[in-house]
Amino acid sequence: MGGARILRGFAVFSCSLMLATGIVCARQDSSESQQAQNSARPGLSSLRISFRLQDESAYIGPVKVRVVASDGIEVRGTTESEGEIVFPDIRPGMYALETSAPGFLSLRQNIRVESDHSHMVRFVIMKTKSIQPPSSQGSSALLLQNSNPLAWLPPGVDDIQPWVDPEVACPLTDVLRGAGRRAREFVSDLEKFSATERVEHQAIDATGSRKSPDVREFKYVVTVERTSKGVFLLDEYRNGSSDPEQFPARIATQGMPAIALLFHPVLAIDFDFACEGLGAWEGRSAWLVHFIQRPDRPGRILGYQAGGRYSSVPLKGRAWIDPGTLQVLQIESELVHSLPEVALTEEHIAIAYQQVPFPSREQTLWLPRTVELHVERRGRRYYRRHTFRDFQLFSVDTAQNIQLAKESYRFTNQSDYEIRGVFTVTPVSGAKLTPVALTFAIPARSSVVKLVGPGKDVGIPVESVASATFAHDGPLDAVKVDAHLSRESTLDVISGVSSTLKP
Image (tube, rainbow, N blue to C red; front, side, top):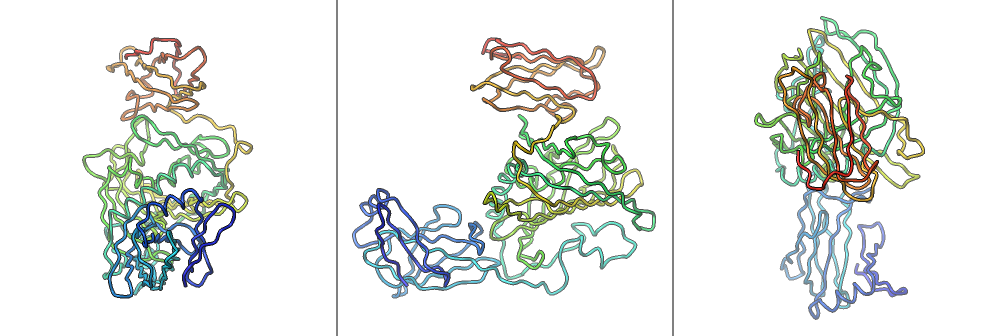
């Protein structure tokens, strides 16, 4: 069924049939439509294929499209943006549109291009294909119940191979590009919500049995900062505080939901990825992507701090990624090797994400649903589960009295223009350390965070910090500096320094 051009006011609508769901019209301003008509070749039209999922969100996964004329000649198209393909020169007549994508039903429909169409849009709804693995293969957490009943730890990532469709090739580059795009969105989404978090902690004895749970509930809020070294500083506040003492057993597990940020372009360079194929996750199709920390790159996702020592955690694992949205649905990780310096021998993490609608704001976010940890440290084992519910979009009205993260300095530019400065940190007398000087700019009405500790922005142990000075080229009181260290030190702020700042 073809469309008809309808004039209403000063807008032109190009209409087409949307897979038995009704007529869909793509609106163009009259000036843009006129330009398109003027630039089109006489007697030819432009056809745009736009892909949507069944919930009307954009489909950005890989897709194959063929447009074939009634005489059997295939028309060539170009991809202008994710989820859209344009066929610029279409002659009037009947065409067959064929689409196929991994994890979705193949579709074939007819299109009639009328002679008076200069621009036509066809919306294609991608319908998911039901998938059922030949056995109950899924995440390693699910396979635990079928393993040794005394085993307290889920099978290792490399000890099992979940089922994948052997007939489907995996476009790893496209999957990683889409997952990276979603990771960038996830950074901002993390700061938009508050939730009720339930934390259940259970010690595990020598037989693998779990003891009675210690349960805590918190009001959960996240803030995100990006450091000069490209690291995301994620601060979690529970009941308005970041104090680790409020966790069960006084063991803090922080930043777990953000492990999916390993697909962010800034952090993805730290890993080697391999696509294992198209498998299943909770009855739906999902790409299975294996990842492992590169030996030549430092770990920037997780770290352990114990006894005044900090160690980055090298990770390997597997992610289940939706083939249509390229959202991370579930991610499991474990240690590449044990960390003797902090006596950490085992750590298995499984995180599931969910789509959370906020009807009053007409917005939907992908947010954490559950986090499960199995940990062995100093010969002691425990299981911990974080569950999130009662999501609310974060707003200024619901803001809590949030404290600054420990072991850091925060510089807030309160002016309407960029301010440059030099931040110098001096170690205590007698320490065999040299002062650290950092030169950086603070954008207008923005903040910059500098972390303190080995391997961080200020590479001096916190206990060795004596004093700090920040000299900037802005006016008095233009920059607010906050320090939150676990030891006492001094901090001087000097304004009005020459713009040719040097450490």
